[in-house]
Amino acid sequence: MNRIFSGIQPTGNLHLGNYLGAVRNWVRMQHEVECIFCMVDLHAITVWQDPADLRRSTREVAAAMLAAGVDPKKNIVFVQSQNPNHAELAWIFNCVARIGWLNRMTQFKEKAGKDRENASVGLYAYPNLMSADILAYKATHVPVGEDQKQHLELARDTAQKFNNDFGVEFFPLPEPVIQGAGARVMSLRDGTKKMSKSDESEYSRINLTDDADAIALKFRKAKTDLFPLPDDASGLEGRPEAANLLGIFAALSDQTRDEAIARFAGQSFSDFKKELTDLAVSVLAPISAEMKRYLEDTAQLDAILSEGAHRARAITTPIMAEVQEIVGFLKAQ
Image (tube, one colour):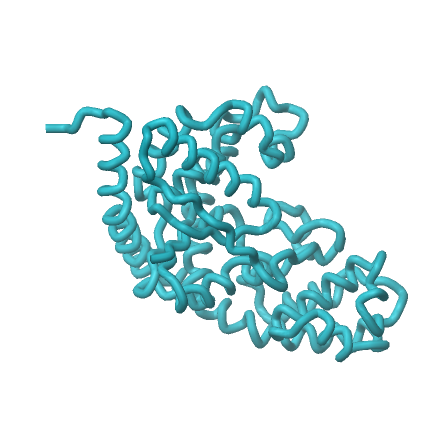
């Protein structure tokens, strides 16, 4: 049976890009294949996190996923740190993966910046933890965006090397699930940059916690240009903000971007933004309200996550027992 694993970092509010690029696709996939969804808090602490903020963000991300329609009875939804098998397998993969492989990881270079000597070891080695996240469940498929393809290749290389080193056919080589339209939502303030939780400007993103007034204000302030909306896709060349807003409308309305272009050809941004705002509110307001309900009852939310962690460990514990046997660890008496 195909099994999908996907994780999301619990750092800051989820935004429209997370919803269109990941969460909405998870909701759709859950009806087709076995899915395991994880708040990857071990990844989050590769850079320093305030403990209270981390706990709050973990609950917020979980609430957003459930509010968006991820079914915790149909799928496994849990917090990474509540299954220690992830960290155990990550250490084994630290001893399988090669330093040269990690040196080629572009995200470390981007996140560490110029001061790499002061970056944490965890930030450098976290691709091995990502491999462990996937392979601890023998997941066969992983939803990925452009910025994660390299890490999935590392997971495949690590699985292959483990199998070759120990002469087994144990770990599958996970395949990517390429995300469709809306997977790359850009900043509302700069159409050349990806929408991000870390952007200093709140006006750069639509948070899933935003109410209708906040959504309307942010779209009204969204950067545009001086020209009407184009008649065809060629008219978007050199107009990243127009391309971004049309792409958002297309994704929220389940249309292609060409269909959105045809609908608004020649119109002013002011008229287009009104329709975009109404659409966004109709899609996101129910999610925001349901998130609020979950976050007002954290005991219920924590219970859902605890049950998910129990089910996750039930899958990985026998897999890890086999890994320990393959590697040559003595069994505890």
